[in-house]
Length: 241
Figure (cartoon, rainbow, N blue to C red):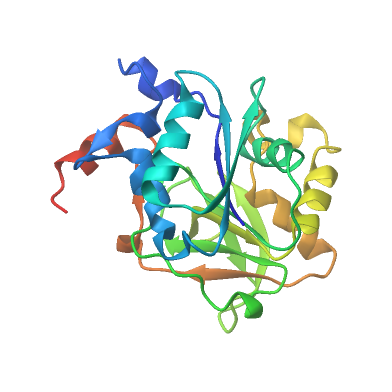
């Protein structure tokens, strides 16, 4: 199942003068929602999708319309009644509202992966993080065990423990692994949460501590497009496709 948490407030876009959530904005003749979800176009007929929203700005109607237009066969839309403390909580609250067993793949609504295909997930242990080589401290990070393997020894949020920056795609081979790791993380002092938020990447540390294999999947930087802040949106609109 592909999980799309989209209950954020788009605060940076509203502060920049926009009057609707960023995923409703348009570029190159399509909404940013379409650009993001079409990353998984190969799986519209075979995968179940879960969209987790706040029903503001007629979001539910918008998602229903776009999902049907795109031709996704199997989907759920879960509406949350209040804000969450971050993406990890948004996902956890959404999962409570449906019945599902097996793997989940979490992806950002403000990121695009044209032509995405899953790697050999059977070789990815309890899960994997998709990464590219980059710099800066505004990413989630995966630290490899060594240069000879794709095994991850540690993950971190907004702390550059390596040059492997996460694209926002997180795969867990079993939904129960995610729930168990999340439940463990929320027992930690809030002061240990990065910026007081619940991010997905740190959850893998629990699985690693439990002895599970967690991998990274490295892609070229050019294979991913970010549209999470107004500057990235403007750049995306200006670029030819």
